[in-house]
Image (cartoon, rainbow, N blue to C red; front, side, top):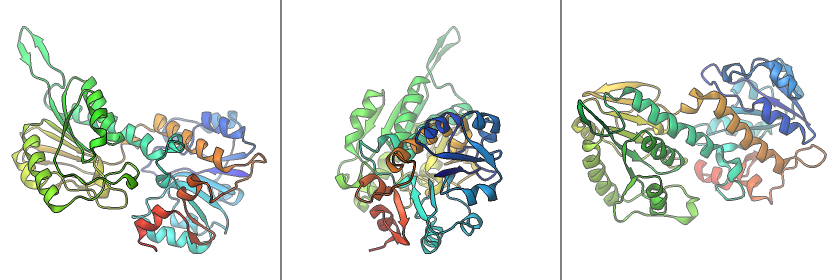
Length: 376
């Protein structure tokens, strides 16, 4: 089997796999072709890929040669049109946003493995791209806030007097939120954290953050560790408490998301207007609507003296290590898929393969993809 690694669009600096992971993948008995220049924006040359055992090719030739195509983001429509029935693509798909693309792939008989559908189980933990990228996002979001905030993060005591530490409010204690807690605490800030899931309370405390609770949160064990939609009464109580905490904070890192749905609105316009001038909001959930009412994805705005950064692509800003983590996750997934003869075997009795496969043989497979798309 030949595996092709595609170059991403001009706005994406990551690549699906670095040479180190290519060398590991070669041991599974496959051939690997890399699109020329695929790793340039992640600071990796074609020569390094060749040294790891891959060959290079132009995009058109790579697509025709490969049985399985790897990319960070779903391949463009133009490339989808050139794929043959039975070819396999592996990437982040975002079924809710790319439902038309996914339906087109299904009709053409393309097999689509969506990395954002990998089950959140212990066995699949090493394949969890979303968690890997969330780690990068949480880290970079805090650094972005620290670089803009007109105050120090840590407390300083000097002959000039005492500088109080910055107060950071983190919304959402998933992987991104917990990494943000760890990073903000390392920088010396006082950190408070809000999440509807009581199960993360101990993790927050272990990292040095203070957990903020709103009574009456609805939780669902079947949600795979994700947050779920809350009642209107809970949302009202939640908003009141968040507004109070936001007014006291210097920085808000917003990370709360619900897979397949619009991000929960946690910071309303009124809250922003009551925040201290010079405060910073970094909204990682911007691409799914944002946790802040005034967030605009891909833009940095200043409203009433408050800087609002709407940015969901932080991993692309740290392309080398992001690509390394991304590629490692893919290698671990391919170890489940590739047999001893170096051929792909999609065993739909395996919960990881069934959960990750969005479409196969012109049918929707993943139960979570069906739920997101409203397919019975």
